[in-house]
Amino acid sequence: MKIERLVSTMLSCIISEHMKFKRTFIKKLTIIAPIILVLFCAAVNQGQYIESGSFGYFYTIIFPAILPLMCSGVINKDLKKSKYRNILCLPFDPANLWTSKLIVCMWFSFLSCIIFLITAAIGGAIFGTQFSFLTGIKAIFLIFITTLWQIPLSLFLTDRFGMITAFLLNFIATTVGVVLAVSPSIWLAFPYAITSRLMCPVINVLPNSLPVPVGSPLKDSSVLVPGFIVSIALFIIISALTALWFKKREAK
Figure 1 (cartoon, rainbow, N blue to C red):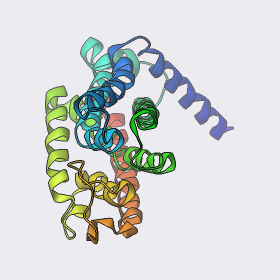
Figure 2 (cartoon, one colour):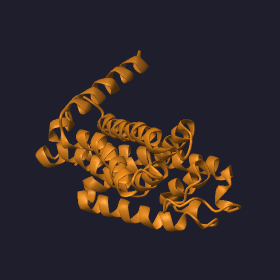
Figure 3 (cartoon, rainbow, N blue to C red):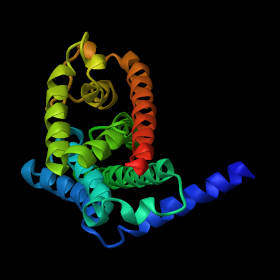
Figure 4 (cartoon, helix red, strand yellow):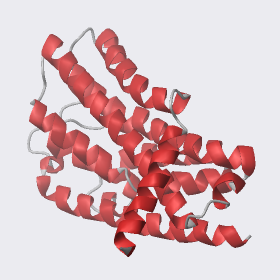
């Protein structure tokens, strides 16, 4: 019964949280931005290398920008208007309320990834593919998983320091990660480099959208499992810590 009650409570929180963003800029951003990116790559490259180019721009520039903006929108919906008074007065555990915000952000993130994958595949079918659709699925899955931990972090940073800080930190750190991704001894120690490193053996494209050189150690696919595990572990740890932090906020 306790488990059923907990599941019912979480579903209520998630549905309520998701309904807040119907026809909002945040929801439109997750849908429109990936499509615009692929169209931009098609125009700039005149249809050539549209898949590899759009994937490179997506995980190094567009997605790192979308995530903090998305999280800021979810946080500011309740923070700016009422300082969370409108939700902390509800008969729910504050940790569940925080988790519902996290899950809604995960859904928006997943939706953005799927829309990008489909749009890029359509562009590849029209102008010529650089890799198979199954490879694209594998790549977008890893992009989604290896950036999950950034969601609870961006939610926390937006609450404590504001949207601009969350955006700049995520964007700058991702840029640094792109540089460190090619370093065999550093990339795993700097989480923002994981996505860029894992994309090299998956789609055979460097973060700058150029092909990975023949015989390069960056083609080594053994990095996939460690990168996946570290990303999931970070997501669980940061999610748990931020949920506990938000739970204590009720007493303040």
